[in-house]
Image (tube, rainbow over all chains, first blue to last red; front, side, top):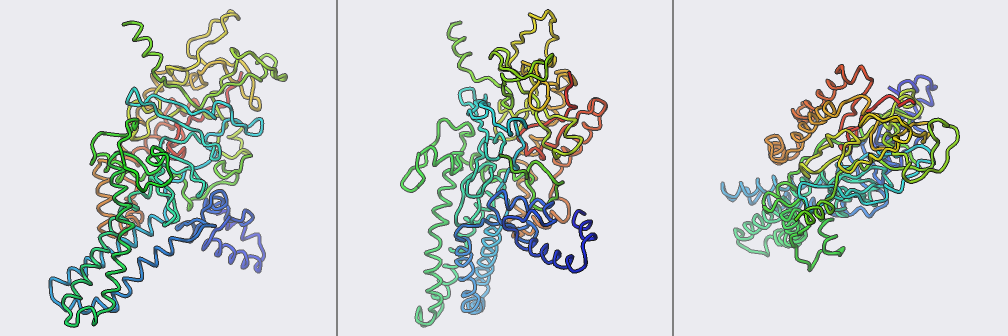
Length: 340
Length: 234
């Protein structure tokens, strides 16, 4: 609506240029240009307030100024399926009925891995809006002394209080388990960790995609090894006749290690009702390797049931998007105002 | 035995509205033009805040303020749950009102303006917010309780909707997320119920006639339950 009104007032030539500019902004929004009319769509100011870049009108997001390791992960996912389709599928398919299901299962889990990877990497992890709890307008929006304290509030277990913190960057009282990710530049609900491999945070709204990605990646690798192993076994010349099978088995054997280790960690952590962030805080280290995962006696979220704990975290309700990049807002919306 | 009990009582964490803060440098209500430093015991308690739901240049912004009802965790830590106590009635609320020396005994739990601060806004010296001018504690409890019930439903992990959502997402390779959005089934029943409930509350006689509005919890990112009230006047 805002765009149309302004388009009418422009000349024909400039309107064409404007349209092109808008199209470009719709395709990629990096550090949104405030002068362009589309500023009334949330993703434009969001791209300048956070470190996100938005594509296709806010549908897809990633981070700017970081090594794009997610592209490397995408390469590791896509290459084996290309090789498999060219060199393996046909011969394994023709082996007989039983083997066909192996091929189908491989393709299904591969598709699941890819889509879950894309969802985890490019969707909203649970970004919280800014400036909802602006304390005052006078004194240049000064934050009062009380807001610098960590507030203890009673929880459902008397001995374990809940701690609340005010985020001075986002100007909100952060809900428990949320944390400010300095890489993304926003507070994320139930913040698990910032994953460099997907170039996104893992939080309340994409944790299930992340876990399903890990599970399906492990299964895909196993399926790939099973398929290529069968091919090797059924070929008369053995490994000499099917070099791609050998290559793919090595590829799968190497690439299963990282998701499998990570998955084991996440099962143990969610079973003890801890997010990665809470676990790393507990052990006081940035590197979880060589540390045992223990129950945290001061964990107020613990239900003392491993599987219940696991389900509560892995299947946590995603909830609605709290900062929808595709929605519009009126000019001067507080969520997008840069306060001193 | 009784000593032990009182020690336990002391160690117990008490609930309060963490949005409040105190301010000693303000202008008295009788002399609003000259701000001065006050004693700690006379500090203003800031209980209402700028309306961040409307841009600063609008008329609505100038005419309204927001009272924030905090999250509480005594019932559960698994889903959002807001305080059902009218601000000023929380166990650790600030209630020491120095009004007795002025001979006007205040009504209990009613907002009384004592000073001017934050661009001509008026505040009291207790945790009692201007919301007390519009609702009785019982009315307030009923309003928030109704919202809390729906929020609990919305955030149930062990619900058929949530489990079905996960299964369908995996089976359809994420097509379900796109499809349910297109077919408008993405928003499950309880969220629709909450939307309707908030709408009905805002249209109800109690709120509409007093020009009080409840902001949808999702607009406030479930961080607080925000009541829009007319700007308090002395």
